[in-house]
Amino acid sequence: MKTCPEKYRGFAARRPAVLPLLTLAVAIMLPLLLLMEGCSGKSAPRPSSAPSPRPGATEPTARPYTVLGQTYHPITTAEGFVEEGIASWYGPQFHAKRTASGEVYNMYELTAAHRILPMQTKIKVTNLENGKSVVLRVNDRGPFARERIVDLSYAAARELDVIRPGTARVRVEALGRWPGGMPGRFFVQVGAFTRRENADNLMREMRNAGYSGTRTVFADVDGQGFWRVQAGEFKSLDQARKALTVLASRKLSAFIIAD
Image (cartoon, one colour):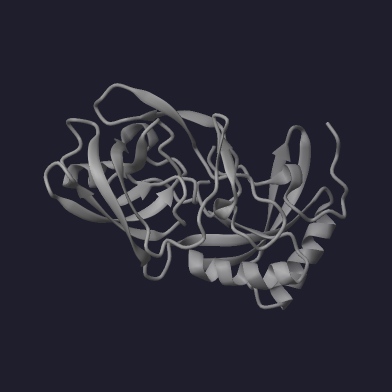
């Protein structure tokens, strides 16, 4: 294995091991899992987390990613977005695991997975077979089964009466951005070093710049130890996004992670 240059403060081979983020990742790649589609007994692969970030201010979940040979290009705005197609749902098999946004999946919350809508988009999903509708928050990627357009959380599927059949024909309408963004505990990773003193120097620099919650976290990657410097902490994804823009402008290869 080639050792990354010490001076490189980017993501490279040192991205945090978010679950195996989700997210916002929000550092993240694509180990494939089998997607449970309600009670239908069928399954299709989906990523357990978001695409791997590259240096820069763009969020990892907004970058193109590839699953099963198909490349998807997330859109930057959901304004005017409407589509109709088949919805499925996912529940216990993924409960308490990371979503592509980096958030922990809670099957009892009203959330959904979509292949290209921006994370934290507010959507209205209507079951065209019974007229029931529910408002959800997009926090994951999927589904990747053919002809499916949205994956519902267990709670959302229950509201729409999709649990027993496993799938239903629905309409998805974007209603804008979820107010306040996603709550939680976030950091912006700004560097990773093989020597702790270098990490400590950057940590002090970040704290002096006003990021008082900045920390260093040790990780072993294929036998190589790295000290990661993570600026923060931030209580919402929106706060982390603002910090990401500032830190990236300082030529730091920064990206968001959820803790």
